[in-house]
Length: 319
Image (cartoon, rainbow, N blue to C red; front, top):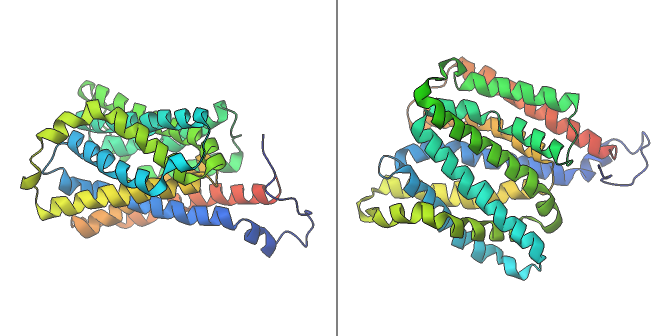
């Protein structure tokens, strides 16, 4: 069921500058999503530096266990008066969207390849739209599907899809990466109604309460065994970015956007990540992006623009 965003008469005098003024929260959400994907697009490059000095499981543990106290203390979710039923739902989403998603991704990446992870990650917006549709939260439209297809084509062009490895030795890793994408798509679709009702702050607080508690059996042994004093300054700097930039700010800003726009619109911005990662790699790892990056980026921005502009126009018409 779609709810009208505003009740102004739909005359030719109304549709115009007023439409865009009334859609400012959604435009702010688009800006927030660009920031989110910039932070998340840079973190694999920074993470490459950190992973030279610690195993993936320890990085996941540090990311969750260091970010959780910050988000919990800043948001103070217990003061929001959220109903107990919704609190339990958000705690469950912390397990689904943070712990299980990250565990499946890291373990899958360990057994597969970064390129396979990037290719399979391109399916996340499609999973999100499918799950949101099955839940009755969204209804697919031709413009939306075309935009997702264009952005996906650009993202796949960025990651050299022809080098995808299908071998039996990669099967478990690829299945885990696929599982991670489905879990994250489900998280976006399920979190959207809760964020729309309560806003990002209390939801993020309870989300990381659930994530931190549920992650302990998986990450704590590795975190305790890690020789933290042996880490270099570069590793500490990278870890600070992963915790503060890609997790604390990234999750909160993404949640703000998800509270304003549909889950599929939030997910489609994920196609910016390969483009941003390619640019960041050129700056940090001395990998110069070629012309295919420009062409792929054009497709990505065209697809995202098509999806988001369609959502703005439908909201403006009250449909």
